[in-house]
Amino acid sequence: MRATPGFGEFWPGPRMHGLYAAHPELDVRVTSTIWNTELLEAGIDLEIRYGTDEWPELERRRLTREHLAPVCSPALAEWLGNDPARLAQARLLHVDGFRNGWPAWLHQAGVADRVDGGSGSHFDTAILPIQLAEHGLGVALGRWSMTEPRIAAGTLVRPFAVTMPTEEAFYVCWPSEEALRPEAALVRDWLVEQARDP
Image (cartoon, rainbow, N blue to C red):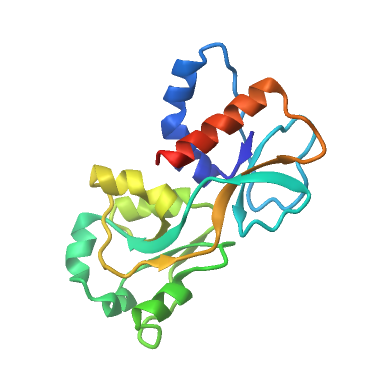
């Protein structure tokens, strides 16, 4: 299976104990990719892709329903005081490559004219922005599938009520012209089942 490092760490990673408990005989190999648009390579049965279902050459099943919301540490949320305009004095943490980012959220929150949506630090995966946000070093624009467990644990909070739905989502994909190996089909079915029970 191939997945972006951020999604691999935040979504299937914490759930894999259930897969291994149900199928102790299963060996899974996960490789990382960042914004790959090529067809699946030899030896890769499944790939997790992020987008708007634009891969007609692949079979796919949607795994997530995403919405975007700023996330940060509880202490930084207290400083922000439920005022999105105060983001002008905070470090924005960006994940480059997503279609929707800070400028779109700031527009929806009504503060795009007061907060520079391009300012802050930029990263090519979601891992470091979310970790930095947890440590109070900035505010990340979190995707629900990646931040929900940390919000539930209390290490991240949403400082504002404004959320922004997005058409982009994570999908599990595989070549349409090839039958999946039984082991790969099992992992695909497990991923789809996990998506039904977030």
